[in-house]
Amino acid sequence: MKTLKITDWVLRLIAALILLQTLFFKFSAAPESVYIFTTVGMEPWGRIGSGIAELICSVLLLLPGTTWLGASGAVGVMAGAIFFHLTKLGIEVMGDGGQLFFMAVIVMLCSLALLWMHRSEISRFLKILIP
Image (cartoon, rainbow, N blue to C red; front, side, top):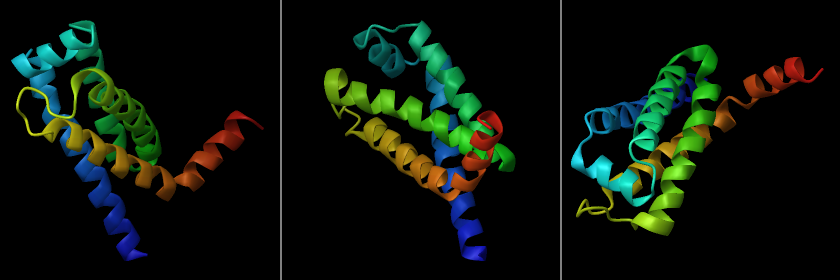
């Protein structure tokens, strides 16, 4: 049981820290972020919107009662990031060696694992939502 709790927190911290780390680049209009969102036709609203979504997901991931909700949001945001890497951007963006792509994959994997670990909370929520 203790190992499961530690794993839960490690996954939450990894996903949240990666999401939070990228916020500076999105909100400061760093050249890489502007390039990415210009390439996919979503600059500046996509850059700022995804930054806000990532901030919300990070907070929800770190709050014990809403981890599953943050993980759900992170899966959605990372699905978009991975999609654009595979279709329009390429795995490597502006000589980053694929770092952004691999960070998106790591957040996706952590979030999927968290969804599985918190499936009972999701089930309880759905039973309340759909009696």
